[in-house]
Image 1 (cartoon, helix red, strand yellow):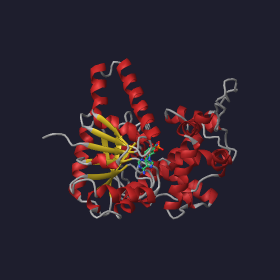
Image 2 (cartoon, helix red, strand yellow):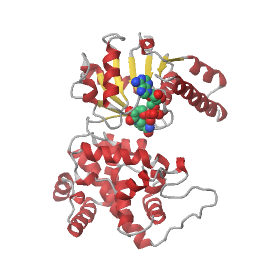
Image 3 (tube, helix red, strand yellow):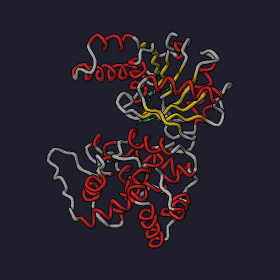
Image 4 (cartoon, helix red, strand yellow):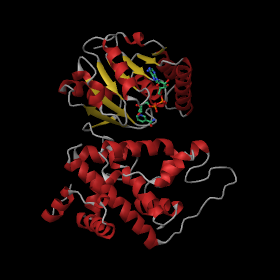
Amino acid sequence: MSLLKVGVIGAGTMGSGIAQVAATAEHFVVLVDAFPDALNKGKDSILKSLKKQVEKAVITQETSDAILNRIEFAEDVNSLFGCGLIIEAIIENIGVKQTLFAQLESIVADDCILATNTSSLSVVSIASICKKPERVIGIHFFNPAQVMPLVELIPALTTDESMLHQTKSIIDSWGKKTVIAKDTPGFIVNRIARPFYGEAIRLYEEGAADFATIDWAMKEFGKFRMGPFELMDFIGNDINFKVTETIFEQFFYDPRYKPSFTQKRLYEAKRFGRKTGRGYYDYSPNAIVPQPVMDKELGEGIFQRIIAMLINEAIDALFLNIATRDDIDLAMTKGVNYPKGLLRWADEMGLQNVLNTLENLQSEYGEDRYRPSALLKRMVREGKTFY
Ligand SMILES: NC(=O)c1ccc[n+]([C@@H]2O[C@H](COP(=O)([O-])OP(=O)(O)OC[C@H]3O[C@@H](n4cnc5c(N)ncnc54)[C@H](O)[C@@H]3O)[C@@H](O)[C@H]2O)c1
């Protein structure tokens, strides 16, 4: 069977990475962008990424040339004629995405899978514009797509089961780890990871500790590769703040996902992080690097509070059937490099211990953000574990 021709729309950060992944898996790829400059930038970034792989001897120069030769760069969406799978990675705007999907249906055959890489829009809101919504699905890659192993697959309310199976077998064949998520805000990773940022900022706002100490605590006691503030500065506070805000709105303002003024002010001041030279930290050449207060009791307390909140999110996602136990744990280790799956971590820490931390916080603050998941309470009552 010959491999499908794959179309990718949007040659930005995500689209260029996805095109590279598909071409590396030997598909012929058409990468479309409405703007010639963006197309050139996309091509440059693929070239740069391939060059790095050749230098590291991951691939040969011949393989790199072959990958690039399999990618056609085009400005016109009509070039997508003949594709069997199209992945859209354009601007995060529902109106623009819907217009594009409606247009795509008049170009491709009836059995072409139409996918969106959206991070924050509902997949069904995009599918609903299509004449054949059953072939529309979410395929959510992580940045950089050519490096991060995780891909979340999101069947919408209208997606045909066979489309999900077909999509899964294609993306699996690209060497990616796929997990299946319900079409709900943030899918798996962006939903469960919220307290890593939100609770860390809350601790800072209360004056419990400074950025450097909170970052140190999460690395020292949780073995996270980066602390929350380092990570937000790395992702960009513009992106991280917008994701937080969108998720809060889409959850009908559930207080658990409430954004913070600290990050909003940083966003307004354009202190986006590494890319602007300043975020929570100052990245200018002569900046003084702040040192953490390495107090064991303080550090463990910080870690306990943030990890309990993360575990609670993971348990609630399982409770609400957002994904399976294994997919939830796989998603957090492969999508955001957590040192352990959160449900496995919950077992190791003891569910009673996690519940105690949350109940103490809830009784201290009287805030709904600390409410323990019903599943956590139930499992403690029944003496159960996740594994
Ligand atoms: N950046 C991330 O970390 C990340 C991660 C996962 C998913 N996403 C999602 O992927 C999508 C793309 O994000 P990005 O960060 O790559 O954005 P980006 O701004 O880097 O790239 C978007 C590209 O789409 C092009 N474009 C805009 N409108 C178009 C149209 N109508 N037709 C064709 N091309 C058009 C732009 O010229 C640009 O090159 C968004 O839906 C975003 O939510 C982003």
